Image (cartoon, rainbow, N blue to C red; front, side, top):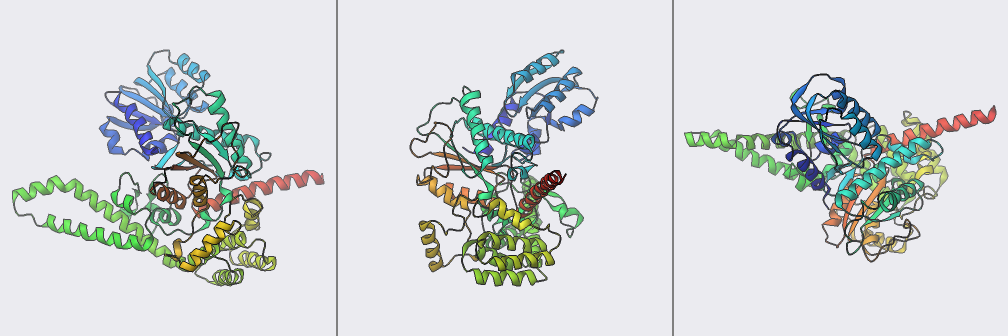
Length: 575
């Protein structure tokens, strides 16, 4: 059930069965799906000498009949039209067409009619319509991620496109895994319900034959949930390696763009890869906390210095030959050391400049511990602190508002006013909009562990024992959800089944899809849960991978659209 392997297998099969020199043609989405699991050097070994985008192929007239064109694109009507145009005057000797999801019959007819010169050798569906960043974590990289926050009446066609894309992505995951799941959804989310119902319709009615795989002992479970049930996790600062890189610098398709850091020397301003598949140090440290990372990097630097010292001691021809043989590995090690040292150095500077240890301590208290009075004092002090950045002030007020929404409204209003005066760049009413979207009335789960008796007892026990690390004491709501599934206690009333397909016994495979996006803190939670050998394998997916900046950007966009709709309606009423 490892998604990275599924996508790699598809690409291997696609490239190794076609001999000779090839050009690989991708679209704006499949380029991420491929680049995240396959390196440039691996493509070269498969005789791929050129990688092009389908748009640039359309714009060029240069004939390359010595190359075989291998397309991997989404089966959209736009891509089919581009292919139709390209097949009308072929530039390549052969065309091998692979689509990352289900093709419609009408699209197949269009392609067949367009292939007048009979250059198309094959047309296949390879279900790789998702970005598999980690073995148990995938994303759909959706640009219009804010749409899940809007009522359907605001942008019906936009929400339909959003739902269709999510259903396509979920379908591809289950086709790649060769499974048909039982489907459940979060009752309080209209978007989650819609996606769950449309996915069930596709799997059990429209394409039931395609999804009719060999029955397993117990059906896998697909659970569709809504980001707004846990708005706290994407608002927190992170202190484990992968999550911290994404929060402070940005991680897109397992790549970090160091050009965004202006203080680096020119030769270091490059894009670097952070992948657990390609980087052994990152694989063993991606879930470690910041303090341990520093010590582990020091050990890696020491090991590298030993290797560098032995390379300087070249006295014989044999030494020289050994140095030449080991040089590629030495250069790779040097690049790896430089990459991790640069990242940790830059993050340390940001932690110091933004006083993030101070800010994060209050964030964690707001997320995990009670005490409204002390929390109000701590947030007020940080709002007054000149070193605290605007985004950190906003996040603190949001966390406080989510936690103490129903307590002392006067103090909450005072914090709103102070935020407006200290950080005027944020639109008025953004915190109130968050409460409207994800306040206590809207949520299903026990986000702060103060509704359910079991969670209250757990929090008390944790308080008595103390925590190992004050900066990483928060656990996402997802942890409780996985625990409920493992113990067979996920309530039907909160997470109803779609149709008459019910769970027989405990599932062994569970895909949790989060509408609105996941975080790396949650993907870490899933990886740790999978390592406990509970007998259930979890996979986490979402519409995007969030950090606090992206979550706030989506929130601002949803607020902007809601306001413009409201203004339009008010204008209509007045006239």
